[in-house]
Image (cartoon, rainbow, N blue to C red; front, side, top):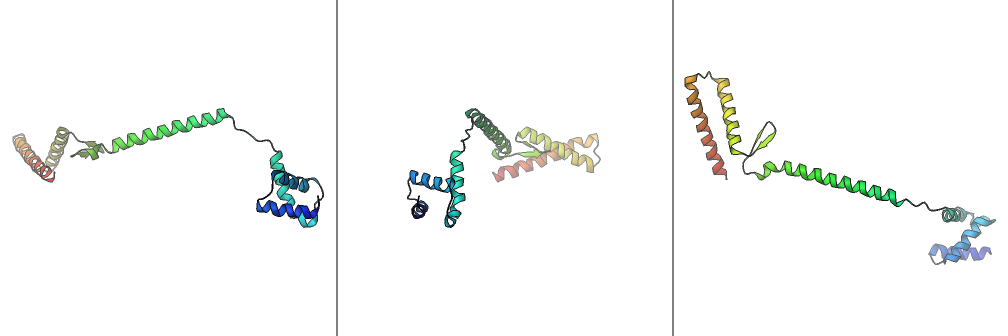
Length: 158
């Protein structure tokens, strides 16, 4: 092929107007024989394309792809399950109108809350005062009065 023809083909090639046969002729010219000095800058480009065409394509096995898909699907399901369990547990207190946190646990049962409150108030009174058996009933009355005050505050805020 003449050098002038090659230069015209290169111009068409870089403009994107060559056919597959013309591109094959360019690859053959730059990989087969002596290339003029003014066109040597294009030789590595066409050598690369020629090598890419000649290399066999590696095909991933469908079995490996299906195993990867199964594993990623299982991992996604596990992540969704863990996230939903965490979400349900985290919002158990948020859904209740009244709740109390005792030792890091959420309680919404009124009887449990009342019992824990009575126990806490008894611990406070026993720690600060000496309570004898005859004063035990008065302590319970004080605690009940305190709880009635809490009921008033809770009912007012709702």
